[in-house]
Image (cartoon, rainbow, N blue to C red; front, top):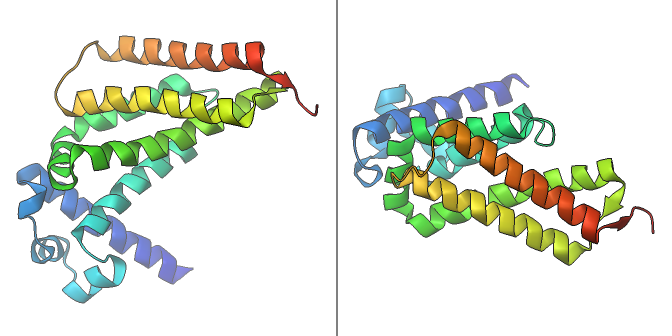
Length: 195
């Protein structure tokens, strides 16, 4: 247990160093040497934890997505979760833009899409349980992908510097649309659970 905690601390320290460096220069110009020097570990330690800098960046995004899943009840707190995501994008825009340049916008969008599809699926399943109705699997999958694509598109626009609405309005509209789409579809196309 102590080893796992120490390993996680090391990963987080490496992540913080990379994030710090990404605020100073493009991702493509950052080296493992700079990361380990900033965080005070050796190269062997870096490579023990991560295959390369890209793997570290992927891990950062996975950890952030995990945080949303564990910190918020997506069914009961969608506004808080959406606010967290918007704040994260706003506070980390330089890092995310740098990641888009390094990985390509499509790769970053696909990463977000995978995460948001999973989150949306969780909300739909919880909604089905709460309403006592279930959607056909194909329709549920399509709904989750459709809503996740909408959120991803909005986030990519924010990363690229386009802010169509002010923060609170984006939260209100997004959660209203997501809630209404999920509840409406379950009511209209769902069948009673257990049938």
